[in-house]
Length: 512
Image (cartoon, rainbow, N blue to C red; front, side):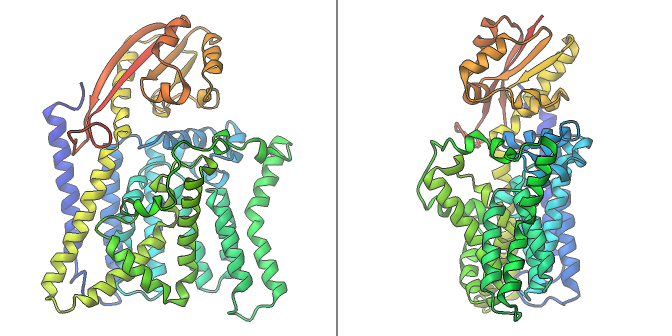
């Protein structure tokens, strides 16, 4: 068993107290949260204090959670790290070209370096959201920073390697450029969104319709059509680069992920993302978000940001309800418009603050600080409750054992991305094994000597249909198997599943 020693528990509690100290120090800085006594010159200082406090929290999270809640984070890191040795990864449909290109540099510093880079991306997104709030003249614009990071789904991703935060940053920049009249620059930034996530295609359509039917600026139809056509720039660049690398004019179609066409067994109701709103906005900020929706509808200058949120929300609701693109209905799919959600919540916060004007200033400060503090607790419970974030602890322990009792390794077969990261191995089998048991068994039988297998009893059987008995039948020798009971860093609920104990069995096999 690991994580049962008292010193580990004590360290975690100290870190927990430190995070809370930084949070409430930020809350106490200045005058109040739910009053309108901010001085214009203080807004930037308060926003920077929020960002600094969140940066400290983010670094603590990177230290506490070496992996992420899903395999995608590790796989994105491996693809970006190895793209310079395998240029095909730069144009991969699943990995996304611009994301892989940008992350290919910090990924050379290792997985923690890539996770830290994501934190910087999220901090930049918070700053851009603050500047957008100032541009829209929303009161107390600095509060958009905590409202962004206190969205549980955004908080979960801010120290992992996913495409959603980078998309959110580019979308916020594009919105700022559009609203400040730098239309062409905004168009080029918006056109690049498709190179970060598939939703960029639909945002491009929305942006094009906005340009065509926007009556401000006195532009003629010829100019509008020309500007709308520029939104295809990102896709054209992707196609051109993929052709130059592969000489296949249909590379994007041929590289299309098979799971995107296979549908999903988890299709649910069309209102699925409405149910998930507490994980998207935060349960304690949901009333502010709902109030903000009504306030934002009245603002003409907020129509494009609002439509961006609505389009992504409706898109994923339909995809999940219809089972298209293999959508599993994750709450994190709404993170690309998290800055817009934060702006909407801020408008609702200000509206409700006016309704509470009869309360004393001290009562409003306490209620505001309590709401922020409780929202942070929810986010902490949310990230700590993901059982998959704990697998890295067992993987590291197995890796340490192998280093002490190891042997030469020519290739490694892994069931989880972090296993490959721990051994500092190339991506290899990520594209080798598919959801085809018979094919996977044949590949195992054909494996050469000095092959190490690092497998688990959860992801391996579920994703690839292979368990420990299959390796022994294929001539592999068992080196070590161990069962781990992994607790959360702060909370472990007395239940199975999310938040409860993570019981995981890991195996090491070897072929001479």
